[in-house]
Length: 186
Image (cartoon, rainbow, N blue to C red):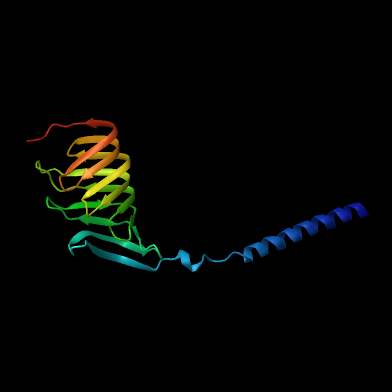
């Protein structure tokens, strides 16, 4: 082997060795996330009854995991099932995840949201399906800016944007509304 090839081989070996050492040192500098990124507490298989300012039930929620965000005092929920009392019956809602504001006056249900109202005059329940739904339990209202599917019996409406008055059991789709109405079965 001549001297030129030997020098090239030694040079490449040195570059590879330095690269490996630098890479291993970089891995060693990775630290776990700071404690501030952790929850203040976690509840598993919980049932929570939230009360309003008058001490009456605002909503109930059950689920497998509840996390309280440090400092923010808000809650993050996994697979929650909500119940909302009302004068005209109980509303139920579920989603993949949810966020509850510190005072419990706003709930954001996120991903695969389904909300079902109490039976109407016809005995049928109205069902809402969307990707994001904000619920304001004290005002008995809900809203969404996302695409929404509303079904009652065999009738289906679709639109973008939703406003729900849970007390009056009325809803409004705001844009791009299309529907299929099925005659009532009596």
